[in-house]
Image (cartoon, rainbow, N blue to C red; front, top):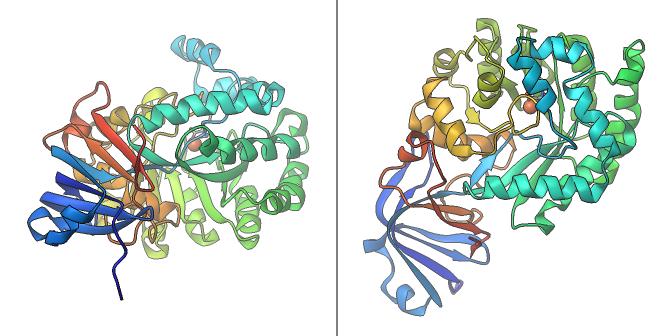
Length: 408
Ligand code: NIG
Ligand code: FE
């Protein structure tokens, strides 16, 4: 069979392919794309001789490092307003839970989001998506969860799905109608759970944007039983399951995610040893979110050593949101992942690439540099990939490539 012509070839690059459980380094490498997919990857010395001459565009990278495009697998970048008031209150000593119980927190963002138009929501989210893109992000998971009514939850998913109209990026939208009990249902909690199960999940599936369902299982949000009802309904409707689990207290969230068939348990600062075991056995991923632990001044850390021993897939994400992680700087998250959560730089970088692809059920399509996978790359002006975790400063991104096309 004649081989497809290549569109573009990057040479003089060091590659972190992220294959396997290490960075999968190929020094003095080259990588080629054809039709938006990776056509060839290997050592430049092994490049078929005629290819260099026949590929229309050859980009010499002067020894830069090239990784898969980063995948931010947990964000809440669509929202109205901001939470500067909460920030001031926390600085004066009020806790995240106290502010939430007093009607601030997530509910204050819900009020601002319901009032915002789709255009307003989209332009705010596009700014944040561009900030992530400046850190080499090519795929972003975006949650709803600041609507908490049928209309606004669907509007949020629609806005998330529209972001590729603002910049070359792929979006994986997640329905998070179970983010907190909306104020109007405060004394009718079970009615809100029924609304999610009977109306919001079917409507979101019908709308066709959501790929996953998520819930916040916590004292200030949903009980384990309510959470399970929502997760199981979403999964039965064909969505992948995600869970905000054991962030502020041990709710048995890790075991719950495993029992309900979710793909990931996220945050997990209070995850118990039983939870780690259940996640390991059911192959549930952990998504580590050090931006939230940092912002809220958490005194607990996820049990990273136990997760590592149990062979749990560990992703790392920004959790970009106005309340608990107002952060779009991936470099800061990589740094916090290493310094505050004890990840190695290799684990942190896998956490934003192959491990994150696994969480989004996209591992067969992206997250590593392998022939056939999407040609989404980030090219970095560093001399060692660990530098991406080490410097806390501006982004060392030299070029971002989406579907084989350099975009920045
Ligand atoms: O991932 N934990 C719950 N949800 C978000 C915070 C949302 C907010 O405070 O607005 C999180 O940290
Ligand atoms: Fe979150």
